[in-house]
Structure formats: structure tokens, C-alpha cells
Image (cartoon, rainbow, N blue to C red; front, side, top):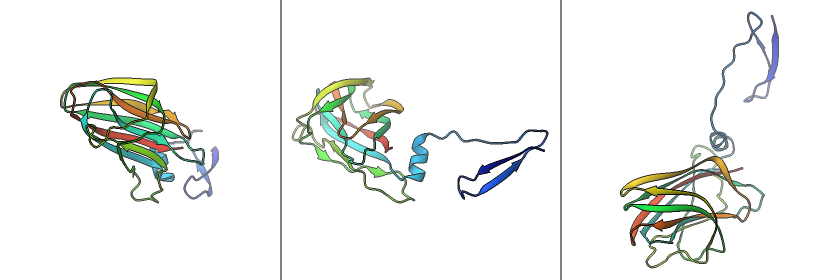
Amino acid sequence: MPRIEYTNDETRALEEAQGSDGRINVSSRADGRGYYNSRDKSESYSLLYNDANASINDFVVYLKNAKTDGKHIVIRSVQVNSEVLSKFSFVTVTGVAGGGTARTAVNLNQAGVARDATITALATADSSSTPMSNLTADKEIDHIQVAAGGYGEFKFQDQLRLGQGQAVAIRMDAGTADSQVFGVIYFYFE
């Protein structure tokens, strides 16, 4: 009977498998990279934002990779909720954000070693009084329309990466002034 030697990924011990009829039975898992990052590195996060009074051309959330160790931010998905019919753009931005309200990302591995999320994250709490400023939209990555009282999602499936010093934001392109926009950004460092 054939034998196969392999290294156990949990214990690192050398083990041997033996099959039958010249074959070996195996199983596999197809979890995403974010799952393994959360489990093994504890650097997977959610960033909630809530703009109580968003208006057209407001940036409702801003996320910048401020790490200095060369790690990238990998964005999995971004959810947007709006109380009115609205259109949004997900854009790269330049400039140093001013105004807004600082937000802290939550580590998704609450059972593991929570690591500090070295990011710059701003979201406006009230666009009428403290809108984000000093940002210039650079590249438009995606657009969505959200129905009144509805939900939309930018789905990047771990494809959008931000290098050191790079930033993205969500801009409200159309809708009713002084309406609530809120949601979450799911990302991890790699």
C-alpha cells in the first residue's frame, strides 16, 4: 500500500498517511484568506461609520493605511445603508483628512491576541457641522445606488489592497441633504 509523509500543520510533526486501493482519502477547506488572517494573525477588523447628516459630495468614511511595517490593508467588503435613495462612489483619495470623527476599528478575533490597528480612520458624525475636508478624490473604483431605507455593498473579495500611506473613502454622489448614512468596512492586514 502506498504511504505519504506530510507535516501536520498544527503540531508540525512528521506524519504518515496510508491509503487503500492505491489511493488516499483527503478532505479540504475552502475558507477565505481573511478567515486565516483572523485566526492566525489576529489582524482582521471591522470599521463602523455613521454620518447622521450626509449631503451630496460629502465623504462619509475615510480609511488610510498608516502602518510603517510594509503591510497592506486588504479590503473584503464595504456595506452602506441610507435612509434615503442615494448614490455612492468608492474612491481612492489624496490629502490629509481633516474634520470628521475618529473611529477605532474592532479586531474580529476577540478570542485571540488583539493587535493594534495602525490605521487612520475617520467618519463624520454630523456633516452639517464637522464634514471631512482636505480630501481629493483620485480614482473611482466602484459605484452603488442604495434604495431609501436600503442597503448596498461594495464587494471586493480580498482584491482591493492599500499600501502604506494610501487611502480610500466613500463619497455621497446623490441623495437628499442631511440624511443618515452608515455601514461597515471589513478589512485585514497582510
